[in-house]
Amino acid sequence: MKGTGMAAEIIDGKAFAAEVRERVAEQVAALKAGPGIVPGLAVVLVGEDPASQVYVKNKGIQTVAAGMASFEHKLDAATPEAEILALVARLNADPSVHGILVQLPLPDHVDSAKVINAIDPAKDVDGFHISNVGLLGTGQKALVPCTPLGCLMMLRDHHGSLAGLEAVVVGRSNIVGKPMAQLLLGDSCTVTLAHSRTRDLAAVCRRADILVAAVGRPEMILGDWVKPGATVIDVGINRVPHPEDPSKTRLVGDCHFDSCAAVAGAITPVPGGVGPMTIACLLANTLTACCRANGLPEPAGLTA
Ligand SMILES: NC(=O)C1=CN([C@@H]2O[C@H](COP(=O)(O)OP(=O)(O)OC[C@H]3O[C@@H](n4cnc5c(N)ncnc54)[C@H](OP(=O)(O)O)[C@@H]3O)[C@@H](O)[C@H]2O)C=CC1
Ligand SMILES: Nc1nc(=O)c2c([nH]1)NC[C@@H]1CN(c3ccc(C(=O)N[C@@H](CCC(=O)O)C(=O)O)cc3)C=[N+]21
Image 1 (tube, rainbow, N blue to C red):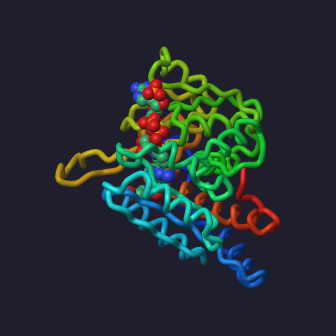
Image 2: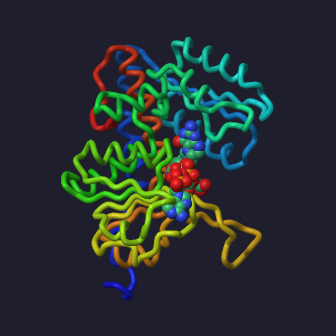
């Protein structure tokens, strides 16, 4: 099929995310009707980055649509670190809050690691607290970062078992690349974690049955880096000038979609792939945290 256009199946993250949110909403309704519990998610946004504002607003809308309570805390960009830590302490102590997300990146004067590690690990629905990172790394029950969890759900849905597959993750950030590698290892893939110092990245990528791109470089991964039939998961969210109208922008991934789709067996689009799954998994994690906090059974099919 190479050179003759599209070969790959498009993995519809938008539709998959809607199904996940539906399952979350059903279980939220049961919690309300039964024990009378309403799961609550608090989102903390420091500063006025327009992209973050849109994203936080979407999360709030989808949280409420799933029947959960949404608490938004918008702080000025100059808010001292101590004030952010005080807010986190209040949210930790608030029994109506089951999940806490502090939107990243934080302004430069704030120590992000300090803020994240101040979150009660049981409420850390991003899965960024050192305690959750350590639990994931040792194969124990944790709250798992939303973006890699969403990728894993799509991969399991597409492949069934991932055991023995060669997985290459490009990008080693704490929020995407590293936890993605841990989850793939947990599902018995043979995992390679590539980064900016990797030699001959194209050749490394070509080994992959599963190729996950989390680099933050628009359309960097090209079709001839992809093994024929591989599954390509494109995590990248990059705003680039619109080709026809430079006053507008357009969203592209870290993979060059057309050339990769011509070779891959399956591929996630941008937008409509990993992004919507991230938000759906945030809601799933909030439900999971709420069930654990109340000693109730875990929601089925929504955890790693
Ligand atoms: N869809 C979603 O829900 C989400 C999407 N994203 C998107 O995913 C992308 C990655 O995000 P994030 O992990 O936070 O990014 P970071 O900037 O934290 O990490 C990028 C990683 O890519 C590596 N890298 C950079 N350039 C190259 C290169 N030329 N060759 C190989 N590796 C390279 C870096 O390597 P090194 O460590 O050596 O510097 C680093 O490990 C971004 O586009 C972001 O917007 C992020 C979160 C959620
Ligand atoms: N503490 C924290 N947790 C995060 O999970 C987190 C964060 N900080 N900071 C920023 C990144 C980025 N991120 C995205 C989530 C959804 C979409 C998403 O829904 N994207 C849509 C398109 C949205 C649009 O059109 O702009 C899509 O891909 O279809 C994108 C990006 C979560 N992040």
